[in-house]
Image 1 (cartoon, each protein chain N blue to C red):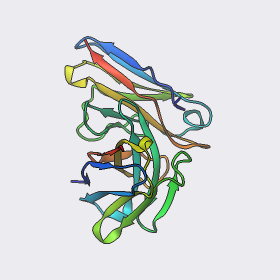
Image 2: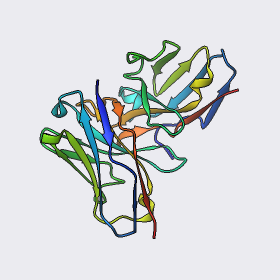
Image 3: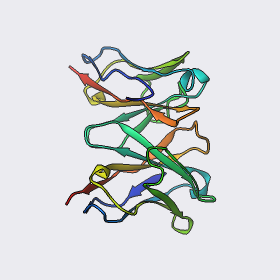
Image 4: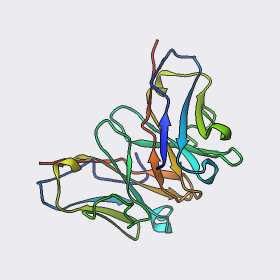
Length: 120
Length: 110
């Protein structure tokens, strides 16, 4: 069975850096992209972008380009989402999901989510 | 404002049928890109409900069905149950914007 397990909740201060993880199992990691989705409290889903574990090729949504970085560790079948300098507006739940190898494909399954709180 | 438009809320009594619409444009749904649907129960991660317009993953009850026509798609739920109370999101691809989601629809089972 395919599983995506995300790292735990984080509380950070503005300006701090942060990396959260998404550990996968139950399938060949390089055969699917990993997509990242943000959900602010009480709001809808926002696609942040995706990474191809085969070659770490990334596509970022324009709304997130330059503010976050995706990476993978193929040996650990794990994807990462990184911020160099957090702001309060980054407070949200973040989900990773397995993404078929086409931009049209669906997301399945999803990780359980990582809650990020940025507050001074 | 989301690229794909969904009604903010729908409601129905147990046993009834409800539909949730997802309206796009000629650069996404109307361009032939597939539509997928997700169910998000309170406090949980989204779960795939329908993929590629009409296909139900294994384990999803046949009470859930999807359709697509022109620049719109719909999710139908028949035989409403209290456990169907959740947020529902449509998802497609836009030739200019990339992956896009609908704004989400809250289903209330009366």
